[in-house]
Image (cartoon, rainbow, N blue to C red; front, side):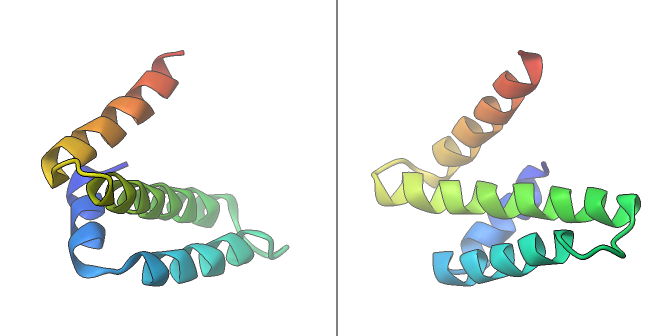
Length: 82
């Protein structure tokens, strides 16, 4: 998870575009010939896209961009600590 990437995705892509990219990446993961290293990269991209979608959602519910980004980061860090 990289907040600068999540921020850029949020600022430059619509939720519809992010969902389309997410669908493509999830399909890619199901191919038999995908290597472990590729899955790691795609997993990171999926996390960043999901973060941008979460920020879109939180901002539409009234949170500021900064607060939404920080809330997502705390959620991810909290799940890692468990």
